[in-house]
Length: 458
Ligand code: F0G
Image (tube, rainbow, N blue to C red; front, side):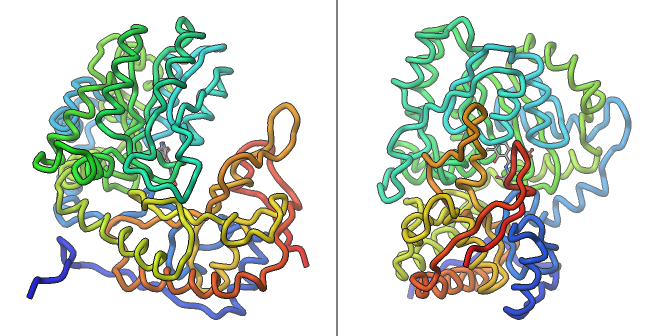
């Protein structure tokens, strides 16, 4: 008999989690203003809010922490990290930062200016924020098919070469770089193919432009290339990563995802001029060049994490959990962004709750229902997160309205995944009883989803 799938690790330390009653959860979510960011983590049973900084480190990482060198300048841990990054990416200039958005802040301070255009594939909110904060434009060139949640494409995170070329034709002298996010988080953790990266490179070269990879989930992207792109089946994840980065000029990294650490990030590049320009900003914003925003011990753990997470076994164990969740949702008929992405399932709330008008926020309504059902915390990646149009102040209802359920790395077991799926099924089975959504009682002008206060409509 063929042996069943099992994890590529065993568990050495456990952390208790607590269940609660529906009555308790109804009270807690009310106190939180019907915003899951307002909940205490202790009020959550299974936390799928994010896969960022929520993973479990390995014994090798914890032992590396004990060996961390906390020297202010020239710490050994920095050189370990730099070597690990160079081995995987080929980039020899490295600047540590305290997380991904700090890497964006430092690099974009050097490169992005008022009136610039930065084309890419669904810039992450902080990336877009750092571009718009500098009065530049983030132009989304993701393929149109990414919007159709039911369309199965192997690389739904891809850049549309025609859209990209159009931006370059119109604004070539105002494009400081092209940014490609791997995997494409906002489109559903969807990967970008090597062929697409090559095509972006060709266009960039034609216009003499450089490419930055927003690499938060680069290893998961490499996994999908290995599994889905012809010609890569026999390559190792490390070989695929090397090829991906060979097509780019630099990277910003949130190490809290594919670095397998709880805090950290970095910039890496092959270009001395970018390094020199970024140096001027890392010192005042983050810290000295050889630690940026990180402790020595955290750099040591990250060096190990990058090595571990570019091994096939680590990734196959992780993506298996996403595949398990997807297979259960298929069985129950629950619609999500297909095919499953690398770090989360994105439930298509407009299809689950078609009776809720967009201005009553279907995905937020479903997020609240799922929390009340079983203490599972997902988050809305939809119309609340989309904020208002800065000019008209109207809500932006043109995109998808998702409930994102992230799976932290090496944290939950397959049994937890089954609980998540069952809770979703229970809500889905009674979806017709959900007649009204929520209205906004208070909101911030920008990034309102973190602090918005809501009221359920009767
Ligand atoms: N880029 C991508 C693609 C991201 O998903 C994130 C963070 C960042 C950059 C910023 O990195 O948080 O370390 O400053 N994403 C988290 C999420 C917050 O939940 O998806 P950071």
